[in-house]
Image 1 (cartoon, helix red, strand yellow):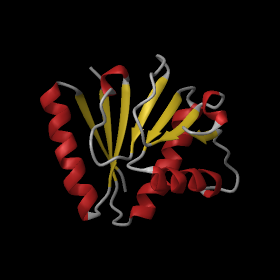
Image 2 (cartoon, helix red, strand yellow):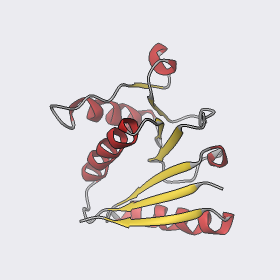
Image 3 (cartoon, helix red, strand yellow):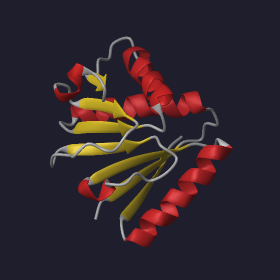
Image 4 (spheres, helix red, strand yellow):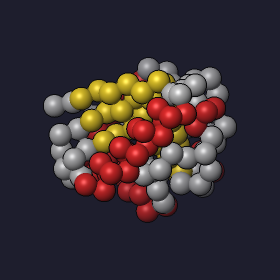
Length: 143
């Protein structure tokens, strides 16, 4: 069973959620993990891709969209299709409103909740579903 870390933000905007996702991606990558950011669609993946370039002027997180030729060569990928097969060092950051098929292959999964109504509703349902499936759910209330 995977460990599911829920990061609970006080912010209400989707931009704040994406900014935190970039910081979390950098932290996970710096700890030596590979990371896949699973997005709802290509538009969100492209927005997250842009945000990873600009979230901090002194930061660099090597990343690529799943459709890029570079996707197999970088430690951080962004996608919206089926989850890639993870290695033992691969974590998943789920930015999709639902739980994707294949999360059981990941040892660590991160979810970000903020106070945006759509996100709250979707992630509360995910929380309940993870618990029903027997995963360890760990909350981290921030701010």
